[in-house]
Each structure stands twice: as structure tokens, then as C-alpha cells.
Amino acid sequence: MRIAVPSMAPGGLQATVSSHFGHCDVFTLIDTDEQTITNIETLTNEGHAQGGCMAPVMLLKNANVQILAAGGMGMRPLSGFQQVGIDVYYNEDAQTVEKAVERILSGQAPKFGPAQVCGGGGDHHGGGCGGH
Image (cartoon, rainbow, N blue to C red; front, side, top):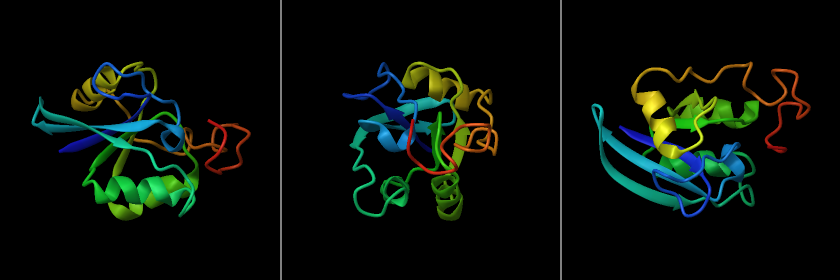
């Protein structure tokens, strides 16, 4: 299984988690076999330049990501992840990539839902992808 965690540069297990997937420096990619980490890579975030909010979605799809841990995103990219088969989990309080991955592997991270979407929980972003 391949997990992506939006991270601050330079990425890696001890990197600080970025609060919004689309505005992170890099994605730390964690390959796991059951409960064991087998590989760690980083992927530079290309941002929203071409393809808008869907650019990071396609970047992660093309990197064979199956799970994303995210603290915030709009409805449009969440729908995009759902369409390409990437499960999104809410990274509520993990400060490091390692903690975010541990929460997913232990079943403690909830699936991303309307309450976490920008604009869905009283947030002022109106469902867009900007702001975080």
C-alpha cells in the first residue's frame, strides 16, 4: 500500500505535516507491507498551476498512491481523489509524517467527510481549494 502525506520540505518520516494537501512543499510517500514501512520517497508538489485543484490529485494518482492523509481540502479535490480511487483520511492532530502514517495503519484516522471539507464545517473557503 502506498500512503501520501503532505509535508514540509525536505519530507521524510520526521517532517512536519502540512495542514493543506495542495499547498505542501512535498508529499512524503510511504510504502507499507501490512504494518511495516518498506520504502520512503518524496515527491515535489507541483501546486495548482496547471489543472487547478486536480493537478495534485493527478500527480498522486500517477505516483500510484492509494491513501492520502490530509488536514484540509475543498470538495472538488476530494471528489477527484474519490474518482481516481485514492482513499482520503483525515489527519486531525498528527504533527509528523510518521505519526500520520501510524494513525492510518492503526485504524485511528477517520475517512475524510463533509465536516472536514473546506466550506463543509463552517469554514470560510466556500468549498474551494484555497486558504489553508
